[in-house]
Image (cartoon, rainbow, N blue to C red; front, top):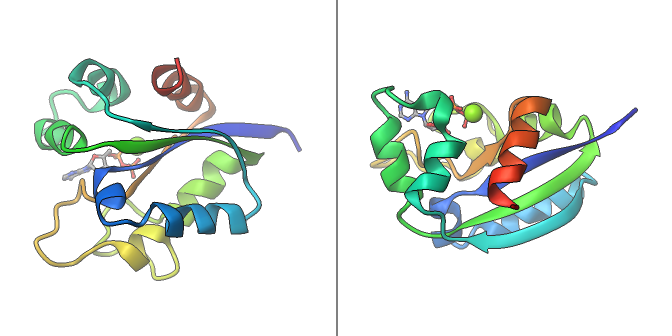
Amino acid sequence: MPTEETLVLVKPDGVARGLTGAILARIEAKGYALVDIRLVEPDRDLLAAHYAEHEGKPFYEPLLEFMLSGPSVAIRLAGNRVIEGFRSLAGTTDPTTAAPGTIRGDFGRDWGLKVQQNLVHGSDSLESAARELGIWFS
Ligand code: DAT
Ligand code: MG
């Protein structure tokens, strides 16, 4: 089974709420390898590149504003089928309905919640992983 790499972000809400350690604990318990990790304060250009597929959608501007609101922890993560595996660990996009046992389901807040405040990002394909790792770890 080939080892893959993916980009994981602990987004500004996860960092601000002090959940980085709890999220990393789940990643490490699963056996994934931390290849690189750094605290990043992204600028708008970096985020526009990262979220290029969502440009023009109604949630695009609020999403970028949220991602500019504080630092994120960027992780280069390796493991067998880690792209699919981490997204399974993260849970579905909207934390209000994400399954219990997932990061978004367990830690996502239900009050005053915006969908973009869903704690983590994980690349969704080999192509996007390569592209996003180049953006955050250049
Ligand atoms: P995911 O992060 O699960 O891959 P995505 O790539 O479709 O989800 O969207 C990127 C981010 O944009 C997502 O984490 C939160 C935000 N988002 C997506 N759909 C949204 C919506 N309908 N309303 C508000 N924010 C949304
Ligand atoms: Mg996505």
